[in-house]
Length: 586
Image (tube, rainbow, N blue to C red; front, top):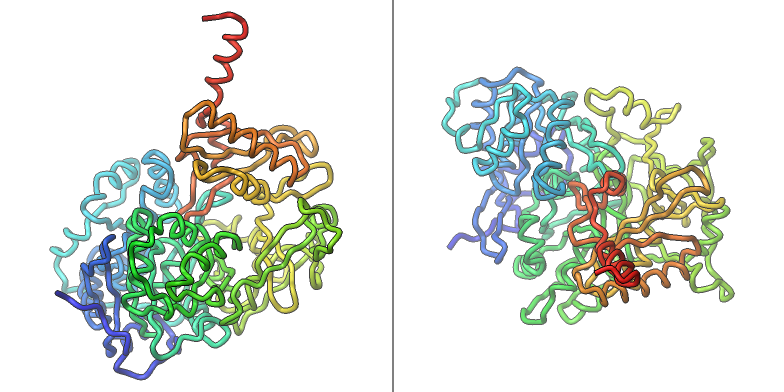
């Protein structure tokens, strides 16, 4: 029976003080730590110490240099495996640029996946695409119009390994990471050695995660997303941390295995979007013993922080040693490599309940009073302070720097910021302000020196002079709905300004006519009370929504799907039949 890599490095901790990923890996290879890959049942299937990773990456790089020119882009299907990790670091030694690619299960069906992959291939101009053998057919099918060789990991191992290494230097590229596409088509975000190293350094410092001796990480996050790729594959290597991995699909089926790995191996650092914590609560059956007392930083990132599901998690696992103060809300995006802000250790969820009606009408985040109606109360969670060496400003739409509690566009500046999007000058220009700051497209406000994120600018719904956040509608629906309901998605269609119709799609896990009618009535009443705007509620089958590579809801693509008529209304047939019965038609 194999044992996972040690938590003890066996060498002094070096916190990201390297100029390149290769330099970081060369030092990590002297340590006793590394990566560990587990099955859905929590059994260790692959142990990959950093020393072995370094040797495998060098050998693979000697094969890649014979297939590529320096600076070529290499698409790699980012499965959670030792093979992917090896290929990624091999590219660093071979002087080529890896582009981690998402997997079919994340994008709403094979057809959608193939279209996404074709767009990535068109913009990435790949010299070769590497994939596990079991995905070779679907990848080749997707790229049948592109002249791109598709090589399996297994076949690549049989190529000659006698090329000369040509490693990336400190001024060189690092990777291309495709954006999740929550509000647009995916774009290839350029990561350089300097931006990636700078972000890792900022995140592991005392102003971020403060990585120290005895730390260990656990992750189920996909490696094609910045949280998984940088946060739990590159960052740990740059601090010589051991990491215990669970495949995202295995997490979806057995989320408690994630917690079991934290418990068994005494992990201290692990992150998830809110829905990951929520899934653990739903699947917990109190049939296992857990000790989560080692978990000092239970990070939340990748999406809006929802306090209620997190509080439910803390309550559910309190007897397992989990402390609510361990929660660490954060904010980031791939355009700044990964992390922009982190909450302080031990602070937990810093909640701010404001008058949402006042916010929608004036743009000011005013705290509630005893006189504020319940339906106007909205609780946000602060996402902490900006990492060392970086700056964050909240700016008005006219470019004015805003003060405390005034909502505006979140703009970032610092060494972690991407130089732009690969082969997309128009998108690059649009992403930056005239004075060179990254305009994230997110909206937020300050509480002291901590940022509160309120949503995406592109998702805002303008109605009768109000700025309505779609997640307010979605969360109100989910709070009122029964356990038979899943994801919700709100957006506006038709007309302009006040002529728009607000649509809310709500997934239901039932086809029972009576239950559907009850759900529709209950949720509609809750929305009327809390939103105060007309909303057309449509109950749809489970699996109707489209999510991004990071698990975020893609409102723009769901809206397109709805407008194309590709979403089924579960009550449409019922309504037609009831009308026919009323008319006496059999």
